[in-house]
Amino acid sequence: MHATDLRMVPSNRTYIADNELDYLVEAVRGHSTCGDGPFTRRATALVKQITGAGQALLTTSCTHALEMSAILLDLRPGDEVIMPSFTFMSTANAFALRGAVPVFVDCRPDTLNLDERQLEAAITERTRAVVVVHYAGVACAMDTIGELANRHGLAVIEDNAHGLGGRYRDRLLGSFGCMATQSFHETKNVQCGEGGALLLNDGALAERAEIIREKGTDRSRFYRGQVDKYRWVDIGSSYLPSDVLAAQLTAQLEAFDTIQVRRHAVWDRYHEELADWAAGNGVAQPTVPDDCAHPAHLYYLLMPDLAHRQAFIAHLAERGVRAVFHYQPLHSSPAGVQHGRTAPGGCPVTEEAADRLVRLPLFAGLDEADVTQVIAAVRAYEVS
Image (tube, rainbow, N blue to C red):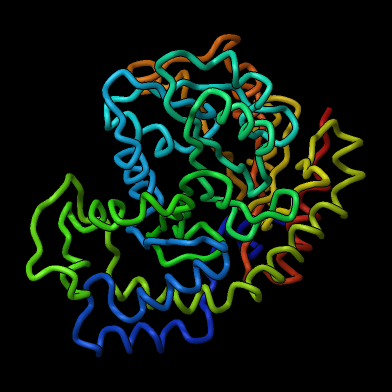
């Protein structure tokens, strides 16, 4: 049977929550669709509830939340920020925009997270912060990273784009750093097309963060009656999402538990029903340490090498399954070479993982027949 005879299983499809369309209509008919409206307040309350954050500010993207965190750190040109090479370019861009130098560290071969064992060797007198990325929503080794950061006086920022609802030792991801960022891009578990949030675990940052998000003005204080007019008081930009996006996000956040149950069901089937095939073909499945609880953000396989990765993706496409690879190393990318530097030891694990990794379809609307089709297609591939 050829792919043309099959219904193609996409790599991702957005989930539509029960109240989503109703909320969108309500937001549009409310005649005020700019940021910080009623749905922004509702969505913010839900973000705080799900993450346990003391303060949360919705943003237009996780990228913009990262940019806000860079401004809040008062980074200067030449300051260094340590981060994994195996991540999305926004993680580095946000800090390079302030003139800081991204310092790229290799990832662990098991979780593909920043390798905490290589962190200390990357620290210099110019290091100001460490940005951790919880890949696939599986937590980094936050105890070790936090201890090192405290010893060297470094801020910890969590890029938690994958990790909404994930935990490390029964503590929610996003609660470890002085700041954390969330993504609500359409590829995430909870989405509004484009959106994000900045979580603030240091209360001293809250007032300035609000100003930065409002174009550098104290407009929010004006609307609360705390000042008689608002003025330009700091640098900033327009990081507020429309209340229409917040309406969609509100419905998604209200459906969070339902979404998670559906995604975990898919992840668990993949993990269980592909275990013997993976072991017999030299393919690695995701590693989830015992002290981590992941949010079923993505399911990946590590093929033996690049040639098998490419052949495997083509094989799945012929059987009606759209599978994709993921991050390319930042340390060797053109902008990474220009704006950053690589930590001692290089990033060989990152380079290998980038060549081998394949993501299988995973979304809340994936039904039993789709999952069965994916599993059958995977199991039909043999590593020779």
